[in-house]
Length: 226
Image (cartoon, helix red, strand yellow):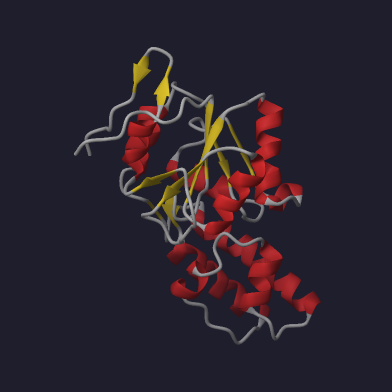
């Protein structure tokens, strides 16, 4: 396979999480159903249904998942679901790194700092890092569970506190594209993920394709063997 000439010379690379780096659908489903039982809520959640709300901030996701619950009960359920899904996911159960992701991260390590910016709740990114032993791979991460900010605002926050001026953002959904545009940085679409976008700056058929789009001082990255 041939790869395009390098398009970006980033000083950092920011990633979405769900559908870009991993698929946690089964673990999230197990956690939500555990929370429903603990809260006495007669709902049964499916992986397909939860995939459909991944990428949304917590309140909007809960409004779609349990619209019949009064607000106070909905928020209480959300808090229990947060605990339960992280309890499951930090063990590595119910999730998988997407094919080629570990090789991609290994090839990028030491070339530019990496970060995760995801629309998730407190503990979710931490569970990902713990489950797959990746805490030392990423220089930073952020999410609205900690800041209360939108994804675009969190991208800007991560850029500002690290002094990064020219990142690229890799994601698989329209919310990722919107966030990158808000932050004023290029958006690279992970088409192997869960979502659809409008007009990305570049498209990846697989994680390793990112390497053919990047250059760093004195070198061009090549796709790792998988």
